[in-house]
Length: 186
Image (cartoon, rainbow, N blue to C red; front, side, top):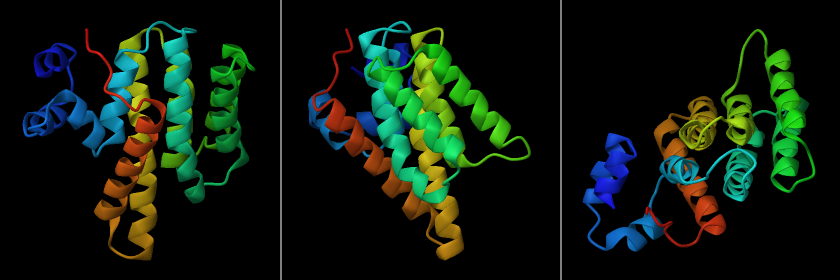
């Protein structure tokens, strides 16, 4: 699996972590602490736009983005996540998803937030031209959600790294709830 992931250009940190796992691929998936790594892999395996795999990826990414709504309650952010979720269920068009993404850009013209970035990344995973772009975009969802938690934690106390790691772990659990067994890399 490590060689296959290297050929897929997985990030160095994920490969180092995977090499340290004694229990094999299935156990590594079950214990992975980073939702961004898992979303990236599912994105690489998700297939072309409009495919069932891509819709499952977007649904998972939206579930990872939702907890970050605690840190940003702008209606455009929630609308973008909900529209991407609807698309993943066949209840919205890719055009609807693109409009929701544009609404985030309009709402945050002067600045952006990590939560808005998470929502936008989940939506972009739906329309990305290829699986590599979808993978990168999906992994950003968990990264941005962790960033939002870390930013918030800095204001509360100096626990940013802990909050970020907890959010990445929460995203990993969310990913496993959608994909409980390790995906095949063949």
